[in-house]
Image (cartoon, rainbow, N blue to C red):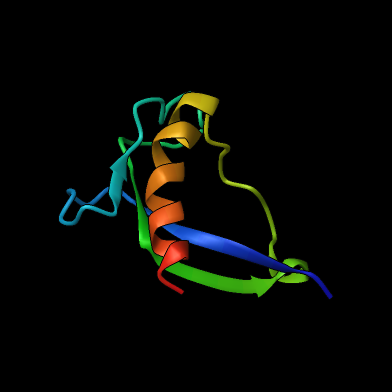
Length: 75
């Protein structure tokens, strides 16, 4: 069984260096301006994912990636 790594996406204001504002939240398919909380990660079985709520644009992925690499490097 394969797992999926998830980061929390929220509409709550930024409050850490690991909260990344999404510039293209509408293009991502999200309903409101959103923040990715890279330091709030979880894994779940892929079979438990019922639907995809959105997809980050490549420019937003480029903004999230350095923070993710910094978090992953601390493991």
